Amino acid sequence: MAILVTGGAGYLGSHTCVELLNAGYKIVIVDNFSNSKPESLKRIKNITGKDFNFYNIDILNKDSLREVFSENNIDAVIHFAGLKAVGESVEAPLKYYHNNITGTIILCEVMEEFNVNRIVFSSSATVYGVPETVPILEDSTLYATNPYGRTKLMAEEIFKDMYKSNPNWSIALLRYFNPIGAHESGEIGEDPNGIPNNLMPYITQVGVGKLNELMVFGNDYATSDGTGVRDYIHVVDLALGHLKALEKVMQEPGVEAYNLGTGKGYSVLEMVSAFEKAFGGNIPYKIVERRAGDIGECYADPTKAKQQLDWFATRGIDEMCKDSWRWQSKNPNGYAKDLKLV
Ligand code: NAD
Ligand code: WQD
Image 1 (cartoon, rainbow, N blue to C red):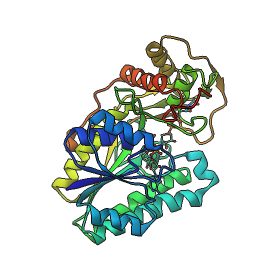
Image 2 (image 1 turned 180 degrees about the vertical axis):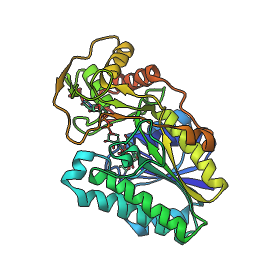
Image 3 (image 1 turned 135 degrees about the vertical axis):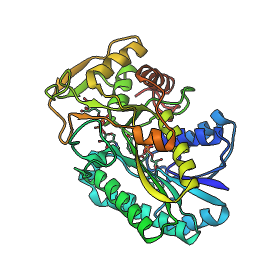
Image 4 (image 1 turned 45 degrees about the vertical axis):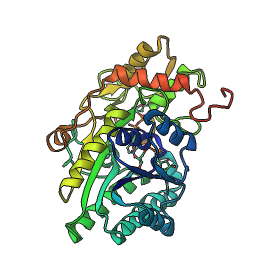
């Protein structure tokens, strides 16, 4: 019996694969490297000392996916594969709908063909749009403000319909808040292409000297210091949440959404200070205009995951910053380790 991990070479997938292997699961990874590098797979093996089957395929290719299911005894799927850049999704919505929605449908069709009906899906706190209140509960109003967010919302709806039509399905919809940090080895971590869109990789690249200064997007939000507040969660805590969700979908059918967050919000300037402590230097920044589409404050109520999955985050902000910095400083160019610092 094996767990299929789609998108397992990516940031969240690679960390989850490490925890799955450490826990004794047999895994099979599929990835098309559209936003990752083969090097991450080598490092998963180095960290764990364990091997796994890997298929360099696109989940849109149904025949290739069928081969994966016929060559391996798949018991459940953790589905990370997807495109995730909000701005790009506004520029290229069809690319996002095709990859994220059609990809998910094809995966589920093949699962049905092979009688595999347990899946853990990567959703996002983005499905809460502009939250009405914080902390955010799973039964808050759902809507999305951009095509990327709509792919997550639509996928959630598709999963709910699948369960209605066939109560053998067992589905966990994991709504991630803001994953940061890296494995404590510093061997795997977040490796964005080009200039990072997200706060932590931007800060770490300022730290390592690839970028000059952080642009803080607005200081006029209704928050303690005026900058945006988010629920940052250590990627290893997030990975461990997948193992708990997997246990749940193995136990009983159903479809449930869970917030994976810490329940605590930090502002951009608090994140800068926390990172400076881990880094031991200054991160220059300047306040600029708000970023279009940003919200002021967003953090989870993670009680449901604690009650139903027996999961809660244990790693705090200092550990998140320390681990992000270890990864970035050991790998200034991410997985492209042979390149000179650019
Ligand atoms: P990532 O880009 O690092 O990983 C996604 C992986 O999927 C990549 O390795 C990519 O090559 C692969 N992939 C994409 N489309 C594919 C396809 N059609 N066929 C095969 N492989 C494909 O992203 P991540 O940060 O690890 O995110 C994983 C999932 O979690 C995504 O679905 C993302 O939308 C979701 N998510 C991420 C965040 C975040 O902040 N990182 C937050 C909420 C939700
Ligand atoms: C965090 C805070 C910014 C960069 C995004 C997606 C979301 C989810 C996670 C996948 C905000 C501020 C940022 C910078 C800044 N992904 N910031 N300068 O926007 O909460 O969420 O990633 O599902 O869908 O929208 O994360 O890290 O981009 O921003 O001041 O250079 O940092 O304004 O307050 P966000 P982020």
